[in-house]
Structures are given as structure tokens and as C-alpha cells.
Image (tube, rainbow, N blue to C red; front, side, top):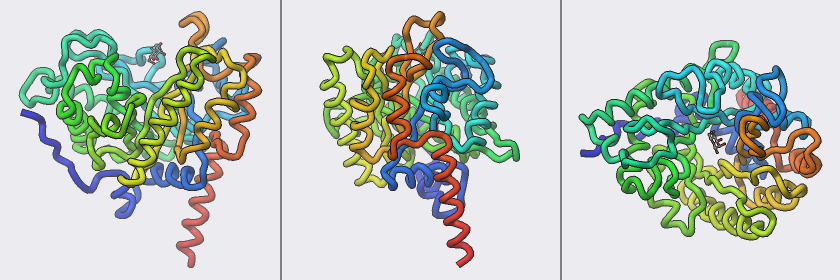
Amino acid sequence: MLVSCGTKKGNNAAETAEESATPASTLLALMGEAAKQGKYMVGHHDDTAYGYEWQYEEGRSDVKETAGDYPGVINWDLGLIELDSAKELDGVPFEFIAEEVAKQNARGGVNSFSWHLRHPGTRATSWDVQPPVVAEIVTEGTAMNDTMVAWIGRAADFIGSLRDAEGNRIGVMFRPWHEHTGSWFWWGKDLCSPADYKALWALTRKVFDDKGIDNVVWVYSPGQVADEAEYMERYPGDEYVDVLGCDIYHYGGEPATDDYRMNVNNTLGIAKKLADEHGKLIALSETGIEALPMEGWFTEVLGPLCDAYPITFVTLWRNAEKNSKHEHFYAPYKGHPAEKSFAEWTAGPTTLMASDVAALRKSMSDSTRTAGAN
Ligand code: BMA
């Protein structure tokens, strides 16, 4: 039997916005306003934790050192929180993440979370796809269901614990069960049925909702798709999702630039059409070209693609410290040849860095106050 989801109505961030403001509805309104103004936040994974040539140095950020400001969005990963680990899968301590989330929020920026969690059967990594396990996870009364309820609970507790200096919950994005249109993670398409995948989302939402977690904007992040049917085949439903994202990387270097353009154009085009129909926002939830072999990539490739769609954010993957993983970086670092293109793109009128997001928040709260005074 599939786990039936409890909460079908009333707790979607967009619906709640009309009733009473929550950290989630406030964040979603900010993201909607950005998209409405034809602007998008620029994101970077693990931005203030480490960079190409440093680790855990207060205030540092490869993005800030090349673009002049912190990113509009910092993405973090929850992988290993399920096992109660003190550090996530790339070694970033969860306590550090909670502090950095508050700092990013205080400077006006936004935070988001991905989750590369372990395989609940083998306890190996997300990339351990055998044996298939989602069908059992979503079947009530099974050991796997119990395990996953506990694991999701730990993720929910952490997200719910994120607070600003005044003790208020910080609104964040969460994009669980990502890239499921491929089969490299154990929740991928060849490892479970569409119904089981959707039930996994329902289970996730039920655990979060039962705990009263009200600070999550939910992002659906398939990989690139061929058509609308593929984008929607495993879509959990409008009541579970706020943003229609996609994770698409530029593989194959310069010769494959047109393929990357085609993939992004095709999937963002599909996401835009669906978002209009379903009343959702869209995003390029993960992207990048590893080690930036094209120095003009941001102004010539990524920027024009992002500018062509009403996305609310675009996130670049991490800058692994050079001795921890060889040439695995997606934003430039000081002195990298792509620095100029990155600085130009992020200084342009459509991109929002942390201080731009802060200004947008301020303009929204000013106009709310003005409206209230009238
Ligand atoms: C991948 C790589 C890995 C990393 C994982 C989770 O794309 O960056 O090195 O462990 O993401 O962050």
C-alpha cells in the first residue's frame, strides 16, 4: 500500500501567502517579485564554506572575490544528516551551515538545500542505486518506511531549526529527490515507478507538515527532459511544489555549447509553459561547466540563456578546494580567466547578488508599509 499523504490543501506556500505570512510565503513572494522584474538570483553551492584555494576562512567566498558580492543564493547539502552526522557529505559541519545560513540571511541573501542522502538499505551513497528501495520506503509498515520517516524527520528538524538573530525561522528553499529523471541516484527513474516517486514527495511533505515546518519553499528539480510529458511524469502535484526547476550541466566543453543551449532552452521552455499553467515559478536549479574551460562562458552562454526565461534563480555547483577534488569548480576564483565574464554578468541588470536581494526585500517591505499606511 502506498502511504497516503495527509496534507493535500492549505499548506502550499503560495496558498498560505494569502492567509497569513510564513517564512516560506515571504520568501516565495520575494522570488516571485524578482522573476516579475525580469531578474534572477545567482547561486553557488557551499559558497562561504570553502573555495578553490581555501577552506573555512571567515568572510571568504570565491564569488565575492571575483564578482564583488556574495551570491544571491547559497545552496547547502543535507547529505548525512539522516545518520545524525555532525558534517555533511563534503565535510561541512551542520553547525557551521546553520551559522552561515543566518549570515547569508542577515546580508539579505537566500539559502537553499539539496540532499544527497544515503541509500537506506545499503547505507552507501546516493549514487548506490541497487537494490531499488523506493517502493518499500513508501509502503507503510515496512522497515524502510520507518527509516525514511526518521531520516526525513532529521532533515525537517534541521531546516526548522534555522533561525535569525531574533530567533525567527529563516525561509529557505529545499529541493529534495533531485535529478530523478536520470538514474544515477537511488530515487532515479529506472529505480522506481512514477507513483512511488510521487509518494516519496508526499511522505516528505507529510513529515515536514506534521512537524509544523513553515519555512520551506519547495523546488522540483528534474534533469533535462525531452518533452512536457517527461517533465510531468513524476511531478508530485501542485500542492507539493512551488518552483519548477531543472538541473542541467554543460558537459563536453566548448564543442558541446550548442547542445547545452538546446537542452537548457528546451527544458526551461517546457518549465515556463507549465509554470504559467500551474501558477508556479521556474529556476535553473543547478548548472555549470566544470573547471570553466571557456573564459567568456557567463556572458556568452549562461547569461543569455538565463535572460531569455523568467527564472527566479540559477545556481552554480561548488568550488571544491583544489587538493580535495581535482579541478572541480563552477564559479571562477580570483585570477581565473573566466573572472571578467563572471563579474560582468553578475554586475548586469538582470542578476541579483546578495546586496541586490537585500535591496529587493527592502523595496517590498517599504511598499507593504506604504500600502498599509494608505
Ligand atoms: C557532486 C560532486 C561531489 C559531491 C556531491 C555532493 O556533484 O561535487 O564531489 O560530493 O556533488 O555535494
